Length: 174
Image 1: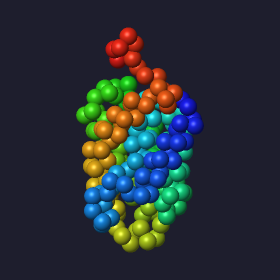
Image 2: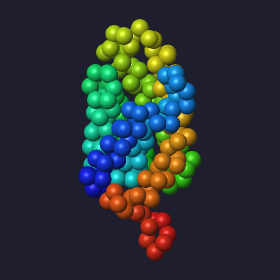
Image 3: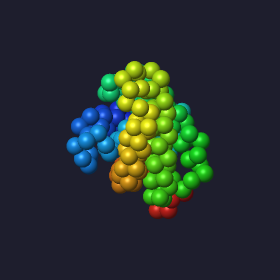
Image 4: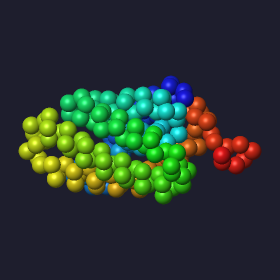
């Protein structure tokens, strides 16, 4: 894994996340969670140690661009990276439906965990209500799952540049 390429991808994903590129409506949801897609891609294809470190760094970056306390997103994102690392050998990583379902379940789990952390640690988030935070996160998860497939496809084409093994031998996937 090439860390310089990861930092560039992290910068681009963070810029897209802050700019809310691809947002459907001017309201609060749904929006694409680009940083979650980046964590999922590295958790699916990178070596285990480097993917776990990439998930932690991405989670801290997510906290730095949000107005929340450090850890409200970093801890759930690191847990998501770890869970995807545990299941990645049990799924067909290159199948689009597997990628979409992993993105959907990861987004829903992130919505639940981050809502718990926000309601526990941030007073104004508790006033918004747990249900409203989870609903917003689940709407983001659905939209992210739909958009994860083409984004992971593009990232998959960049795997040799990113320093991740391509998984191809003699033209066939192994």
